[in-house]
Length: 485
Image (cartoon, rainbow, N blue to C red; front, top):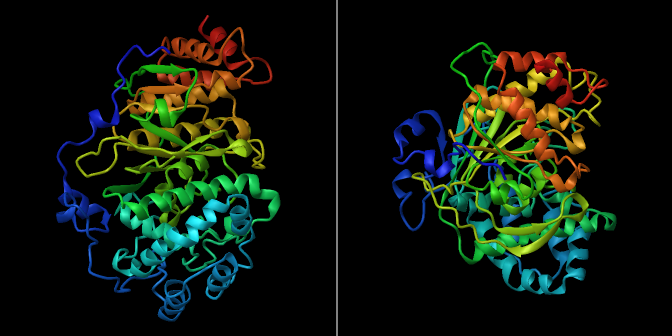
């Protein structure tokens, strides 16, 4: 691992003195800031009052009093003994629930989980549900396209939101319906993962294990901390001729995971344009895995409208709860994880997640090539906005937009390196050499060579090298080498 240079961590560069006055003027804070250092952080109001507009705020489960009374009577006041009883209760207010066959199959496969769920966990979750109007006392605003704004919430509020999700309490809406052409927000309820057919069991069971483990943890001991959810956007492409912008250091990590070896840096989430991707459905790629081991991240699906080409999402403070192994269909839950990250001056875990979505050139039906100027300009802008919007710490990233999305690894690395230079950020690049068939020339060594060659050019010259690249004639490495020679 070549890590010679300056690679500041998040905890090193983050603010040491809180500026709540500034935050309250620009962002939405859903808790009482005077209680941040107490044993329990209190909500901003005593109870939910329903005073908000649906066009600008999340539609809350308790905004429709009749529906909320049904939820309370069917869920909170019932002693459940089996899945069928639970299914009937949820179906009374959530029409999309036709069965809970996946949950039932899970309990057959893991009978000890069934005993714990109905005997201990479920009653605790019911109490959280009943108390939710006293925890989520304000409707979070919708962080729409074009907004530069953050929402600050407590870990207890996140847990409450996810309990509401499990019981499918969030109102169904065309803006969240997965089959709707008008959908601009991701789904938030568990209705899909609770009722998938048996053919999906291998992919859904580990999901249920991650979420149920999280619920066990928070119902046994509610974490006391803060999480911020931030949308950043920009309209102008950065100035390539700005001579104050210089190449920054790059550290190559040939093996290991971003969330492990990169945990102290800004961690890039290879995101879907709908934040969270398929976390509450079935696929388990990099983003979904990150959200499953840190379920608080999933709350982002409540209020972030899908990202445009000039936007990124930054989540700071989410705690990790689970260990895992595998990827995609081999993903498996491997037990409890104790997150030892320290907290910053706002009582957030020193974990910053940067979500930037790539274009799917393999299955997305896009007419443009990834090597067209419009395409790679979009990616430079996307990465630049995200990198610059984070704390000035090292960016832990990897093969963003490659793999399932069909991106050229060498080309995409050059894009991220240009974006990092424009944003004045060093990179920690995870190349996952073991996943590549380059025995004599590992990917990390190839990219290190590209980094060295790019640093002999100006940023503007490097951009021109991207512009001249013809993928059908050579590798990007060879192309860059020829351009320099």
